[in-house]
Length: 224
Image (cartoon, rainbow, N blue to C red):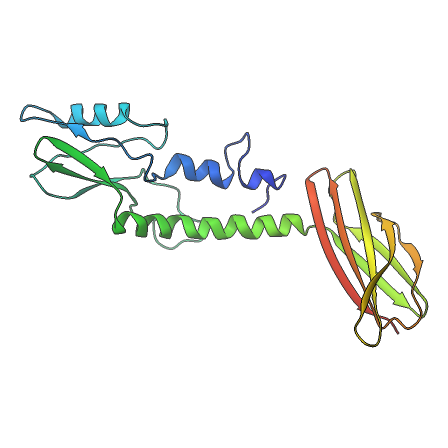
């Protein structure tokens, strides 16, 4: 999953951030319809209208409701969504919320069946967005090469012009003690630095920003 910036994985103008997609497709405890007062003459259409008018947000909406016997738990189902690429079976019907007619009113709620359907639909999507965000943040790669007394540092994988950034270099001695010894600007052109005497390993940490926002990267190599 590739998005143009770190924030776009959460929310964006194209409404394809994870928070955007979740908000318009799933109910929560604070967004289910309010209870609807009914009597013997109340029709399902009137219940749906009152339920829809009670929603704090325009989406998700209240689909068709079918009022049957008193005390029978029923479920409202989400509209069908496209099957995942490569899926052999069509997606299961997903419960949006439950509803129950009791004397004088219709109650709306979330229960274990709704939570189970929500998890089956949403958890794989969360995993995809999380993986994409990690790949996005670590999109740059530090190329670190060490020789006796010197090292070269370059960076690849940035998107567009760099707005800011630096690579900080650290050296480990034979006892495993680590200390910073140099800082170089982020560049695709290799920069050469002197390596402290006695260094056994060197590490590099990149923090910066490019046209796609913040980026980070790490690298490490042995000193011959």
